[in-house]
Amino acid sequence: MSDIAFIGESSFLYQKLFAEAGVSYQFVSADLLGSPFLPRFKVIIIPTGFANPLYSKALAGLQRASSRVADFVKEGGILTVFGPMVAEHRYDWLPLPLEYVCELGSRSISPSRHECTCILCTSTPECDGFLIPGQGFETVLEDEKGRAILVVGELGQGLIMATSVHEFPSVKFMRWAVSRAKEARL
Image (cartoon, rainbow, N blue to C red; front, side, top):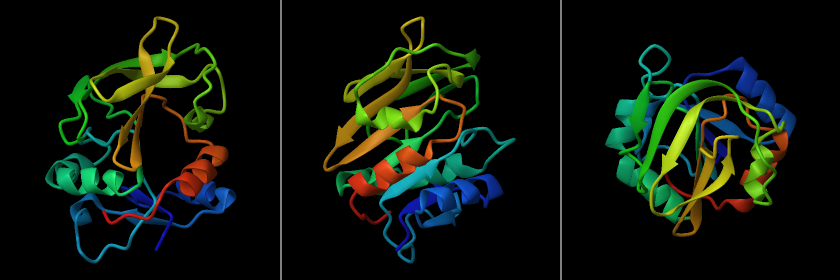
């Protein structure tokens, strides 16, 4: 069992981040999502660009495995998904309604007391867009125009976190997510 499943190809930068956080991880191809041979995980990270064919081939796998992703969260896992890096995106593979609009730039954000905001290392993060959350999501961080850049939705025993922050998650976040989540099958 690894703590974190990173949906995508091996990345030296993420390897370094996981090592610094002291968490175990496995890079998982989106084609393998839902395979009975995958171990249990606590956290799934879907990096920026998952829906843009120039960066990733993950979207088709996520769409095929949408019910498995929902089951993972219901069982207590934490799903963390970053921006898709396309003009607009409907997260139709998530069990809660969410939309995204691409708009690159720095954002000023107000502090929030929600524990998951430890994903950020700064109060002026770079973002690749903003989110339009539907029922079931709570907006945790907004930009200076009042648009969501971090939303959280509870589903069963787990959480879905979506963000348009275009930066690596903090070491503190990795440790928080792994300590809060429960092992679940993907």
